[in-house]
Amino acid sequence: MSDQTKREYLVGIYYFAGWWPEQPNKYHTAGLNWTADYPGRVPSLGLYVEQQTMDKEIVAAASYGVSFFQILWYPPLKDAGKEAHAEHLNDGVSCFMASKNSHLMQFCVEYVNHAPFTIETDEAWESTCRLWAQWMQHPSYLKVDGRPVFKIHGAHQFLQQNGNDPARVAKQVKTLRRIVQESGLPNPLVSTGIMPYEKPLEEHIEAFDFATTYMDMPMLPVTETPHPYSELINHAVGGWEYQAIHADKLYMPYVPSGWDPRPWKDPRPSFDAPTREEWVSAMRIVKRELDNSHRLGIPGSIEHRQKAFVIYAWNEYGEGGIVAPTQGEGYMKLEGIRAVFGSVGSKPAEDTEEADELI
Image (cartoon, rainbow, N blue to C red; front, side, top):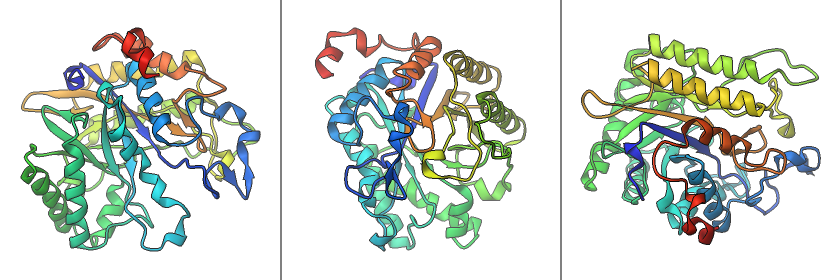
């Protein structure tokens, strides 16, 4: 695989592995399959996160210029009854690492630390850090200037889980850095999640290298019909610009591919999915902002900043954040990514004989 960190821009997409065939599953709300009402969201490459699905998804993403999946990882639940089949939430990491196509793109891990998914003891933290360090040895793990990239999902939750003590947060992050370096890798680039219009106290995020956002939306009134996508992308752009001016750390922009959680009966406002023109425009805007602000992206070596952003999301089918090919949109969002970023880097895999064989 070519070293994708040599690209001028890194295009990342969040990957949620919460799709399994056993009942209950996330295609059902209150016992009813919501795909009958939202058939356009049905994925084209596989309903469930299984090896054959991941193999196809890697080829599709890499073929259209995607650099990496940022895969959500959840610690095992003490009480398995809190979420049935929660063990499948981590199938994304295992399927990517096992894929015959993993050389085509990269991946990194985002530790999801919202309740009830927490790591509660120092012993469990150290053990889990060793597991993460092992995954960072994978040849396709995302590295910037040789440094593995990693994220702790929520800065506020992590602070609370560590007794609201910034010194303890710093100690835990230092433990992660130590264990990764003991495994023979360089000091990792550790990020954390914040909201786009907040400026955390400096001591609360001092231990981290940069920050980013999983997803946010303007809290508009809930209406019978969704709000326009322009409201969603304008909210995101305003957040990037706020962070570029006010943040103590570099900020990696997030781009919403949509937000409409009505299948899950989520009470928050919904927004239209972007049209092809709106989506290409969103890609052009994030490219422009990365070009114009030295405060956006991932920190690299001295005097180097990696231009990078991450899209919400590959497969948040229930929430409407979708880049994966679907019955309704086909490959539209991937085509939009390639229209703006696809010429960067190596020849798209779909144009090679190798890709034909892999699919």
